[in-house]
Amino acid sequence: MSEVRIAAEPRTEFGKGPARRTRRAGRVPAVLYGHGTDPQHISLPGHDLMLALKTPNVLLRVEGLAGGAELALPKDVQKDPLKGFLEHIDLLLVKLGEKVTVEIPIQLNGEIQSGAQLNQEMVQISVEAEATHIPQVVELDIDGLAPGDVIHAKDLKLPAGATLAGDEDALVLQVVEPKAAEAEEGAEAEVAPATEEAAAE
Image 1 (tube, rainbow, N blue to C red):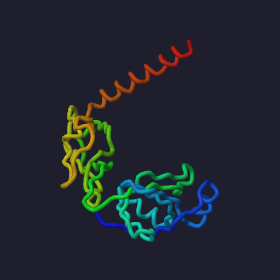
Image 2: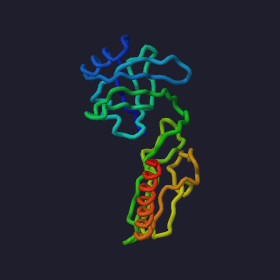
Image 3: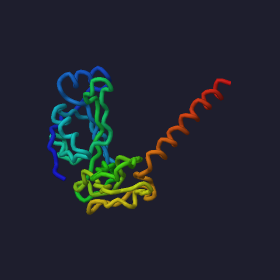
Image 4: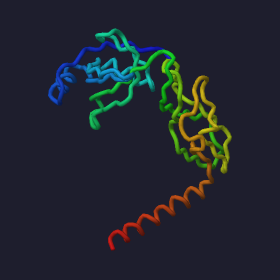
């Protein structure tokens, strides 16, 4: 995974007012923490950060810090629910060779058997990998899967250097007959009104 360089500036004012002023200036308030160090309050260029975050688990080289450049991973990204702009980001310090646990998107390739229905329970998987070699996706070939076929986490072929971090028996997806899927949805619909009636009583 390549590093994305991004320039940080220190923040000395806190609260909603200073945060709004920071965002109006085109920057995003951020906190950099990890490895037992004191949190560093910084701001990052909004446009550059937005572009960087288009890559899942992007590795950032944060420059302009008092102690020199540091490597970091996005840990918590807060966005405005209506306008979508970045409000705040938490960054986790990482070191070369250090292993971290991250969520990786599952990319489905191929088509299941014609007439069948795919029920995907997981769209990402938790893996452990070196901070500087985090895979962008976990590919899963579903070509030709038929009703009755089931894929669990342990069945995924993880990229080199990555190991499964979650429950290996977790259900990733299953292929079912359309009628079975409709029957299951109908049963759920019948349960809902009964539950509402019971609540009313």
